[in-house]
Image 1 (tube, chains in turn blue, brown, orange):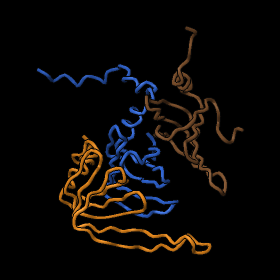
Image 2 (cartoon, chains in turn brown, blue, orange):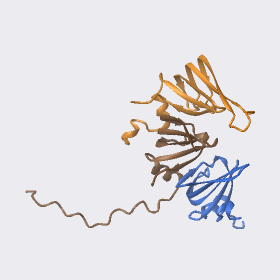
Image 3 (cartoon, chains in turn blue, orange, cyan):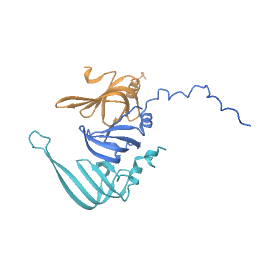
Image 4 (cartoon, one colour):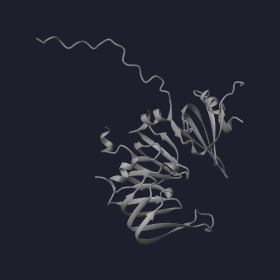
Length: 96
Length: 85
Length: 95
């Protein structure tokens, strides 16, 4: 019979959080997929949205995107593909 | 051969400390270096972005940021940037 | 997989899913256009049909202000867009 009460929560230490993650660009990107980000292009234009994915060329797919040109929202896109060569940086816009 | 330090080894030694990044254009960044890759794309934390305009220097704070290595010109380890000098 | 990204695993999937749809394309040099996407490649070279191009013309010599912006439009039946000029491609909103 298997009426035994569920085993008490194991007193094992939880797996250590990703140990002060090595901090490489790849790790950063793994961490920000699905999060709100600011993508700034070399032209100074910003795209704020949720990062759906990106590739090795820094091509980016964003969702719920707002285009900001010196502080003003100039466009909104449900989805946006940004060609990687234009990207200056990708910055986290919420806690990681 | 005398021990030689490669440029990227120098940058590797900066991980964890502040670094000043000067871009090809009129833009600079300072931040704590978390990591970088072979293209010198850099992950920075507690970043200040400086834009040098005719009207002066505009600064902008950023959280964790991946900076594209493509337009990086110079790296100054251990410096807090333009406000330092 | 992240349900919010409904089947998109790499950025090019966004483009692939927009084939035969009207897309918005932003190009270098303040050019914008919409057109039906027929084909693309890894450089983001695009073939668009039924294109309407919007050209922003900024009048630099307007005193003091940002410069008056006028908009010119033109239509083209079929267009090849060279990938290196592409900044952004936005598919029709998925519902």
